[in-house]
Image: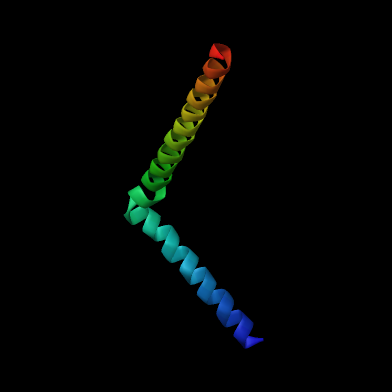
Amino acid sequence: MSLSRKNTNISFANWTRLKDGGRKYPFIRYGLPMVSLTVFGAWIIFCKTSNNIIWDVRFLRQQKS
């Protein structure tokens, strides 16, 4: 039983340290998620537009032939 209590205390200590890290370095807490959302959003938009261009080219080739 004492082993499980010890693991719980370690886990809680890691959680508070992680929480304090967000206060010390706000970029990690707020900036990093925003950067990742921006990058993934741009990548999704790029994939959609490139897919539309591919389908437009296929459609135009079918109309010509």
